[in-house]
Amino acid sequence: MKTKRKNVGRAVLLPVMMGLMVLVLGGCAAPRLDLSFDAPLAEECPGLVVSPPVRIGVEPFVDMRPQVHGSDNQKWKGLIPGILWLEIGSDIPEIYTAFSSFSSKPMNYTVALAVADILAECRAAQDVFFIPHNNHSDYDYRLEGSLQRSLVHETGYYYGSFMYAWLTRVIGLPYVSYGFELEVELKLRKVATDEIVWRTRLSGTAEDKYYNVYSLSRGKDGKDIIAWNFAQILTPEVVKSIAALQRALP
Image (cartoon, rainbow, N blue to C red):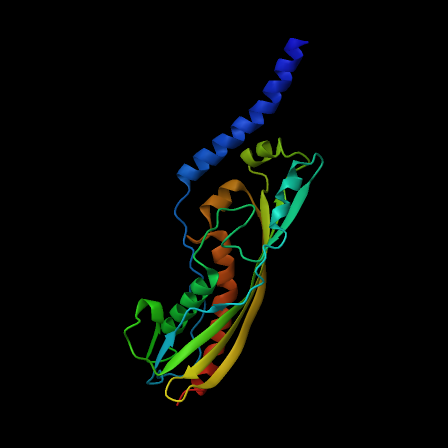
């Protein structure tokens, strides 16, 4: 009877120890991943050949997201035997994601910085800069914005057992899949008159599926997987808006 109990104990302990080894070794080997939300430009920036001779300062955006954490408190359900997968939504992913270590600055700050970088790279104006990084400079226009949505939907795979899911992760079976939603509102204000001369809404969705623990820790193109996907949504949306923004300038 004692031998049987010992065997059961070893069978339970083995996957736990292997899982802990994966986490420790994976954490030591994982590179430091980029958390910015701007992606390399895939095509030439549209707009005027000569940048308008004005300066645009971009301020941190207002956070208008739902101040809840979606269903991120449901991870405990993975302890239930027979659970094959678990779906969790995070409305504020920089605070909590169930299946990754993503932890960026507040996303209203991160998104605004990315927008400033993209506009500067595309030469949307003679000078475009992020105000907190250059707050002693004057500017002709102020780009304001609000972050309306930044949903990360995670599907974590348990294969019927929370305990033995570690074994599937060690051998590299899928650990998590993602779905993303991003929505941002922008408005350009002329400083001299306090007039809003242009506004737009940027939005998009993305899916990225079947990451194992190793590919998740490696990221993609040097970026964290979550940051990479938000960048793939945001960058082309900003680029497409540049021509209309420039038409609003003198």
